[in-house]
Image 1 (cartoon, rainbow, N blue to C red):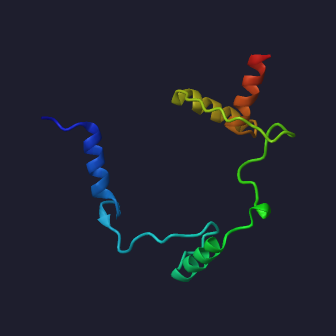
Image 2 (tube, rainbow, N blue to C red):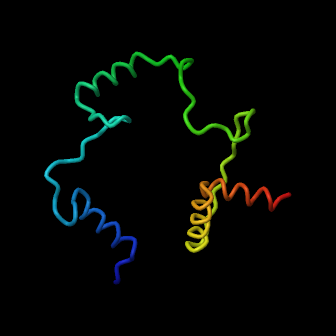
Image 3 (tube, helix red, strand yellow):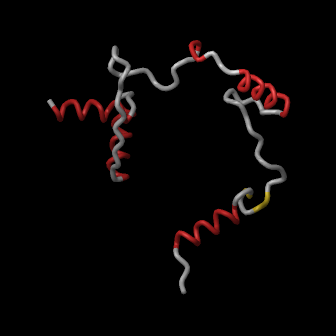
Length: 114
């Protein structure tokens, strides 16, 4: 019975995991903190002690981007899929105007729904 594409790709991912260009790497990847410092055993223990002690969530920072609404803190996310050629045209246009593709798409949607 022929092997399905998904089982072939799963098998090849298993075989290539931990390799670089077909060769085994000499050591496993090193975990790094957000700022790029390696996470050593000592740092892992320190972080574990902090987590076990609990965090003061009232001092927490909001994670994520600022709201586009300017006031109420809500910016619903809209994901779309496009053909590659449309995306490439949008990227070129946005780049030439010093914008992101998201900014370009928001402007186009605003014009369309008016």
